[in-house]
Length: 392
Image (cartoon, rainbow, N blue to C red; front, side, top):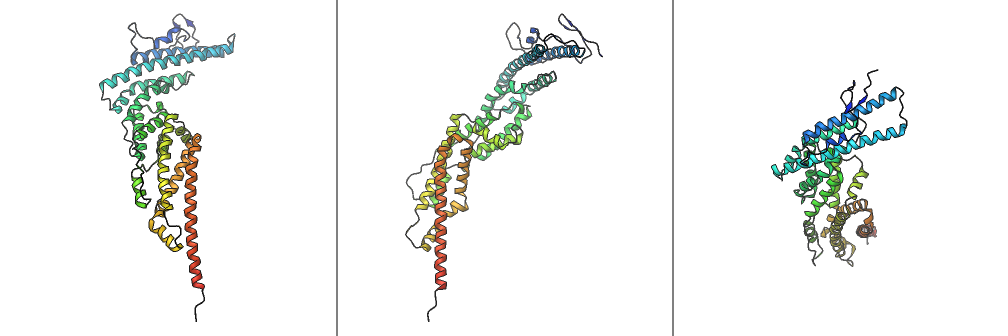
């Protein structure tokens, strides 16, 4: 068995372990974060050196305790000894988290002053060395039995304002391309070693705000004839992709990137957890968009003659190209799917989604039943004509 080191003033006697270490329960670990007399935050190089020493002291103490335990030297209160060790490890993690938070804040300020504020890639790249050290200390903490997500603790809160700046530059007028822009941003974060600090709900939140900022004013509906052309004119002023669909696409990119587990339920939960104020704007925007289109389709359907003979009425329906919109262009199916998605994302808004879903189902049932009845009427008339006895 190797030589057992014993406590002495100022630290522990060197043992055959990898590093020289000392008792962590003393305030010595606070040296990692305590600034100099000028009250300036410590530079990253100093935090690295002091942090390494503090972790080494903890490692040595725990190793020493384990060796004593292996020799049968039990502590008077074993449970309290375990709890004390856990507290020591937690304190050390807290100290490292605070120290690196200060270093990161200083570095972000420096980079924002010395680089183009719009060039966030350069800012992220400039944070790389500090992030590498934070990750290294996180690994060292895990080795001594104190695993914690140090990168998330340190970078998560500081990263959020930078993400807000990045998303403020997004051109989200083309909703489907928003997911591609998120892809690009995630790549930049990964290149800087920041992928572990990304909070998925922040990405979805800022993407939602970017999409809402790019939302054009609602088109003027006005009193216009309900025709194929008027419906197309209305839709040309609208987004072809709903906000909810665009946000689910963003969440799917987080899964593809590995930031979010591959769980469809998790995607819906993430998007559905958007803060209430933003959620309300999404609902109003998407529901209004469907309502305008549905109202125009309802009026279009009702504009067809009701009292005409079956053949003339069917000819009018076909000629109007109503079914080109409703069936061939999948307008009714698309809107039904969009409403279903809104209901799944925001269950609390079911009472707002349900009336539109009911109207949509009613329109689909009415037009399908009517056309089938007209076709049957024509079939009956044709059969009757064909089966009528010929004259002498």
